[in-house]
Image (tube, rainbow, N blue to C red; front, side, top):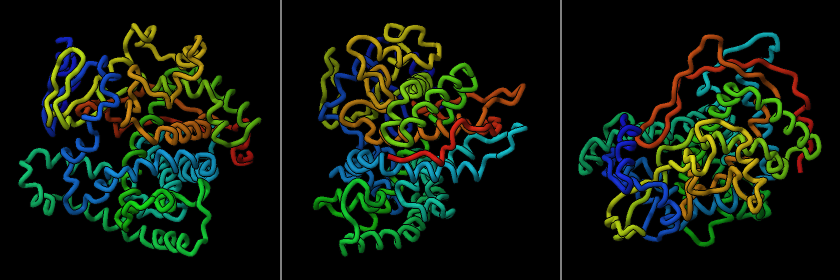
Length: 458
């Protein structure tokens, strides 16, 4: 797990598929050229990989298991209701961003303050995410917020610890291992905290007090609206909340942190980004469309995603023997991933080792490319959001949240590394990049060009 990059580099020299030993099982690693080929292959299943890597059927793991339902309830919640509601949740997101940043950031315009990136950034993202998914009351509830922030890490540590033991021991170990016991406690505590809101939401719908539509409520209400005969119990609501937090908070935070680091490393991008933000917000206010009009910011974000990419992605379980175009047979029962090497391919990207903020903006200016190369676009040359039938359904929300947060962070603050500071590097855990917990940045309050709380919403 610690030598992933070295092992993959050695395997890639073979020029075709190869295998590496991961924590859960041997995994077949496919060259990037197979990404398009397998993107919608019905023999390949993402959810089954999670059932193999985590004890999803054991007590305490019901939350994760609900997020992996095969009736697509959770996927539809995100793909349909969350995406349709972006315009209507923007005001809540802006309000929560302002509240969260005011909790942490100094108003002193005369001096630089040092901040732990994970401590501040993770909390801010968690509060905004919880506001959208669970409502204002719970996003300001410190006990609930602690669960939303800690459950992902606790679950992954518990899951990877169990993988060191034979599966027949898992039911026993799940009862006695400290991290597994914490997972169970977090589920129970989340259920206790969420129950009043869940019961109140159900009653409002039963009494007809809520008009169904994209403007209604939050993820609690959206589940009821998207149900369409699918089973919906208390654990479904709680599981959806934990799964939404697990899917969104960590990855959104990591990308936000990488954005700030790239701004510090390439300060020449900051003024053009600020100029675009101010011009569009003055004219359009806060809205989904105003975020979409920030073309340079979109290009900047996608370039951050390209540079700070996964080693490999598209984790899949093979349900039946599957043949690739080169004749290779991937046997049933295998697990596979696809290299994200397209993001550094010099045949696709000029000077791929360089960070170029407007790279994708210029690519869109080429004939026939006006509607391509956006942050939410998916392709084999940038697998940050996956590809095909299992690509990230929440990427539109992530893009919306990142753009809104970057507006706050760039218009309200200047950023730098403390003089002489050597920032720690990211490291790999299997094929995922892990952001260092001790990374620090310095910020100083600045007078923003426009009052971000005095803009209209549309």
